[in-house]
Amino acid sequence: MTHNNKRDFLTLRSFSSDELAYVIQRAHELKRLHLAGGEHRPLQGKTAALILELASTRTRVGFEAGMFQLGGHTIYLDPSVSQLGRGEPVSDTAAVLSGIVDVVIIRSLSQETVETFARFATVPVINAMTRYQHPCQLLADIQTFEEFRGSIRDKRVAFIGDGYNMCNSYIEASSLWDFELRIAAPEGYRPAPELLRANPRSEVVSAPADAVHNADLVVTDVWSSMGHDAEKLARKKAFADYQVNEALLDRAAADVLFMHCLPAHRGEEISETLLDDPRSVAFPESHNRLHSQKALLEFLLTNRR
Figure 1 (tube, rainbow, N blue to C red):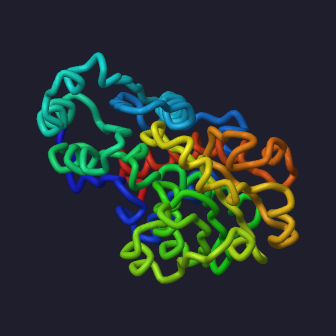
Figure 2: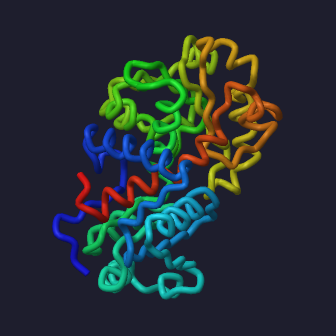
């Protein structure tokens, strides 16, 4: 099943700033249509393969519900019960699925696995999270910010915590959406210097209080992401001073928003009550995974662009 000029979504930089803006605009439109009870089924007869090597709630439900609402169908492939889990090369699986489905959505710890899949697939491939990037989450985050506060351009964003996949995607986003990003992360858990050099609107600051000063948006993530289970105690100690709580948010702009990609560990990276604070939009942010991922699927699988 060959797509002419097939496009992949492996990092945010897979798309131009204009294309990303278009996808977010469509996410707003698709959300309005959905909430009004309207139907839009441009993917009638299309099938997605969803391969998740790691646990998933928002990504899986967002893509499965989204494909269904757009008129398509999703096949969930658990690697432990498919040939991938028995050692079939990624390149072979990519070649096989390309002749059967219309898009492949894959979550793996390895960015290389996702990129290899895309190289050998003739249908679009979507990165549903790796240890290096989480681009689908950023689509929902930008959609959510625009919904509550308008354009994120030239706004000040603070990322508190692990310089891991979410932080890396925020660094790329700072260039693509043109906002200022300040990152507070402990020594040994900071993002790669070359990624910061390539995105000059991002910088690492010394403390969470410096990062959140006058911030329009404050973001965090868990201290021990998937793949870090063995380091949990060491990470708890390293990140002890990096909890986002109400007092820290008070140092930000008066109309600050707080986001978290979830699941959250209440009492660790956030205070027990932060998700219930009126400044938190973490739950609307999670709901927007549905609409932004629908916009992404439509963009990749139709000629609407």
